[in-house]
Image (cartoon, rainbow, N blue to C red; front, side, top):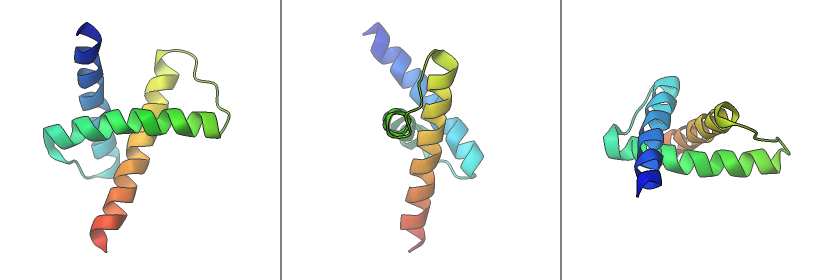
Length: 80
């Protein structure tokens, strides 16, 4: 239960930061989903690019990168 709370808190922060960087947020719940999915996408990107994630800050950076990629893709889909 304790870890789930941290995942939600970090997901909100990552989603908010990605929304700020892209210039478009999706609200609290949307930002949570984007943050959590961004962490998964960032993990996939790091393994695909053979980038070694070692430590909190590099994992956070890859999560934000994954969330930004997700928001850009969502923006492209919504604009069509």
